[in-house]
Image (cartoon, rainbow, N blue to C red; front, side):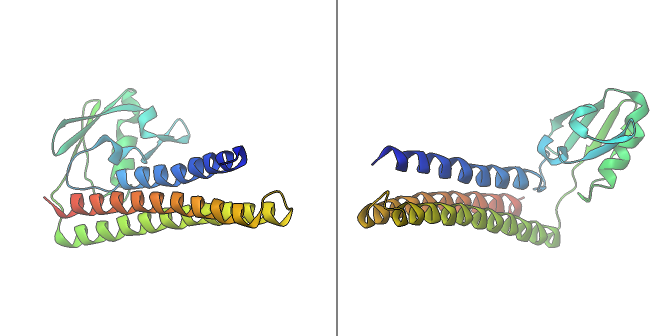
Length: 188
């Protein structure tokens, strides 16, 4: 394997890892009936005249399986935090207790589980599309090298095979992550 192929594989691997990491972040925001600090990470709070990530105005904790708490650092922001969580579209109903915002995690209904499973599927498909897009870019680079006579036709076929193996491995990871998330959503 020439050094150029290694550099190409490293670049493609890095980009495919990015797609998998995006999927991991997207899936962490899907509520599975269990409390997780990641559930509130995408929430933005109106603070000091700007939309600020919740993690920058308070500490998120999970004191029990069905409860998330947010220890708000600035007492004047407690109502903004409550409003931001309520309006986040996560279906949560927070309550303030001094500087602590308590967010109970309700049981998921069958209908909501189905919606969440579909959302998980959409996230996984977006990740697969991103991985295949990276593969396409890699294949185009290989064709360009072959056209410029930097590599032979046989080398181009070998490199294309390596890129396809890499793509297959990443698509398999995406599929496994998606299946695991769907199992998590469907179980109580």
